[in-house]
Amino acid sequence: MVAQIQAIRGMNDILPPETYWWQYAENQVRRAFHGFGYQEIRFPIVERTELFQRSIGDMTDIVEKEMYTFLDRNNESLTLRPEGTASCVRAALEHGLLHNQTQRLWYGGPYFRYERPQKGRYRQFYQYSAEVFGLPGADIEAELLVMASNLFEKLGIRSMVSLQINSLGSLESRKEHRKALIEYLEKHHKSLDEDALKRLHTNPLRILDSKNPSMKSLIEHAPKLSNYWDKASREHFEKLQSILSQVGIDYEVNSTLVRGLDYYNHTVFEWVTTHLGAQGTICAGGRYDGLVEQLGGKPTPAAGFAIGMERLILLLQQTEKHYPVDPLLHAYIITDSEEAYVAGLKLANYLRTKVPHLRLLIHCGGGNIKAQFKKADKSHAQYALVIGEHELKKHSVTFKMLREDIPQQTFFYDELAEYLKLRITNKKLHEKNDR
Image (tube, rainbow, N blue to C red; front, side, top):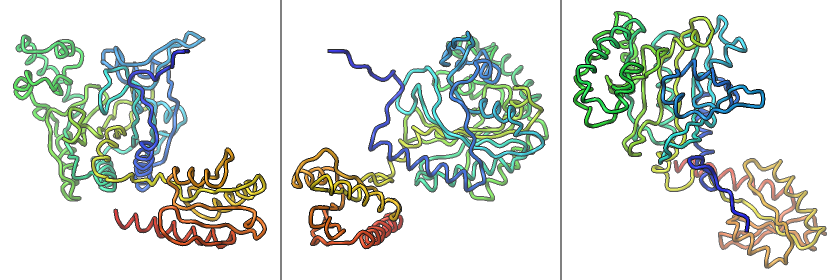
């Protein structure tokens, strides 16, 4: 026998009924973004490698170890996108979206990083993101956080996540802090783990984000970024905290929350949970005023966040007893001849145009009426719609309940459409009220 081909490790299939959780979550994310006036942008999965080398940096783990990079037939180095912000900035610059205007954009899709797969973190993973360009104040950062909070509330997971914020200050204040941090860490050289030693002179700020328990005390006594903030940075962070307090969003200032890339400044934040073990960050973002210029544009204030969909759905599944999207069929059409089957096809098309949200399947593959009823029952459909010789003559349909003990009825096509519309609409309203 020919050997079966399996999926690449860390690149997972998402099968029914799991896909219904994804559909529900993605729909809610889109509605949240649209509700705040954000517009969708789409860009390729593959970009020039240089884009990520310039934005993320050659010395980062992502570029050094995790990117899926290859040469195409023109010997050009291309990369499967490991993150979305750089691609969003590239597209906005290329198409003139940032010329003397503000933009609120959102996007979503798959990203790729070669790292050790574990629950909630895969080599192909999915994110939905929001980005804002042209607004320098703390007010837009607060809007991003309110938007995320509203989304988590709608999904029923707001009580399971908490907000952590910090400020990186200005680029100038970070340079002063970097100098002091390196001096401090060099004095404790023997206490640094392998990753910290590697980052000591290339990306020392990331050492503060280490989860190594043996370095906890060392990190706690390291020079604090807040001691190096200039007046504008302090006022910016205080303004954000004031707005969040006034709109009722609880937060914790986490002084070890950092970003290791130079284009980040001022606010950084994460929505975290204790319900998923080690992979506790659901949403992360911040301000990155230096990236647009770094990629060839004019200096442009920018801020945004990304939501990890795998982790969001894992959290969502802990709150719901049933699928948030009903995957079951409403009706199954049964016919007893070729002529009846053609009539069934016409009926199916008619009902789909007349009844919103109808999920309808017509039996294919032949078989007698009894066998078709078994198939209908196995499909978990709620109703059977039967067209036989008698129904063909009368241009009618026999309607039979499959999950309730109610006598069967006969309908003409227009009557059936109104009846199904009423039942499905009432069911959707009932489900909505239950939530």
